[in-house]
Length: 186
Image (cartoon, helix red, strand yellow):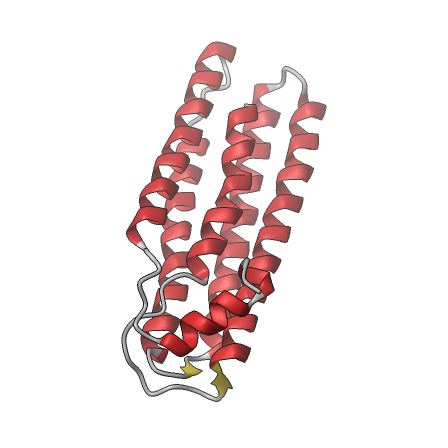
């Protein structure tokens, strides 16, 4: 089960990188400057990462408390996935509420950020469906199925990371991203 928790922590990092990553295209622009918009999106990403990390910590404790009770472990995994789905929805909503930035590539930047979280949600929803089917009658089968879920999340995120390269056409947004400490710039 340790591998599964590592994958969930990795989720925050990958989703975060993608939320601030692609800023290409053109658009009408919104009320926030490129700098302010990038800061806000990166704040959403940071809050998302913190929420996921906290959820992982809580559910690790629940699994430890469950001991050999596979049904309780299964429920802890499902609870963690429910929390991550809720946090993913909240992050998507927060970014969508920002609207596009006042910069070239505005609509594409907003779409890339919300699309990234939508893709994360899809991966997590699939994992939750798989978790509901975790076998609780056989410890070896439970471990094998848990590892399969973790591997599927990892594979999904690897594909997600490689599918959203930072190749945006807006120099203003690229500069804002490069200067934003919350997204690794500055």
